[in-house]
Length: 260
Image (cartoon, rainbow, N blue to C red; front, side, top):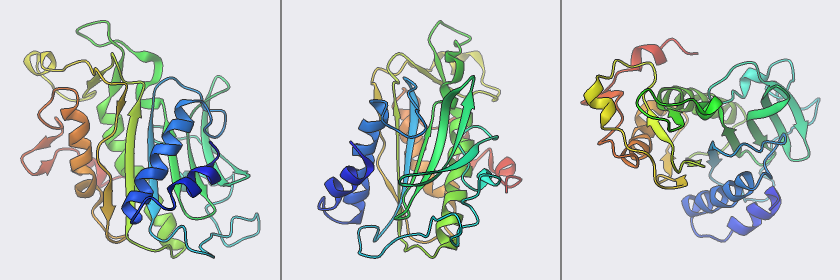
């Protein structure tokens, strides 16, 4: 399914939140089938959509021409569209907008794409990179720390881009992880004790798709806004919540404060 088909298919799904969810589901199917951008064809990945309200209105478009008012759309400045989990992306124009992709050994392992109507599509296999094995068994792992850090950092940057181009709030954020059956979600980089590690459960669903989140403005605290769906991902693995949260405090807060 092309992006235009996905947009038209979601146009009459209901309110803006339902439209964003329907668009995400259609694009998720396309990415899983290998029809994403930049020849992304990994068997496991994270798919995120950032959808401003009003993207279906007539005339709602960003000038993505090479000489348009879009400093982010510059192959020499791809960090304006960061890829979840990795720096070093290279930017380029597509038939539907502008994107930045990361390649390892010639294969696309992640990309971020800004469509001409203001929707951001972020896809990454990097938290699954290398299908590394758990310290306690032979299951491939999903690096939860990379996921939480990268997702928060990237969504914050995407909001900056959309705000710069005066897109309309509220903004809807949808998230899914696919190819997760048999994978263990782990908290890489934390001081987990052996008892806590033993509580991890292998994911028994091929797709983890927590509920969408609506951000009422571009100044929202992204950490707080994404906490519930991130917690839902961890609960889907048998964890009671994210191991990075202690009470109401996100233990990575100090590290996030240094990421600009």
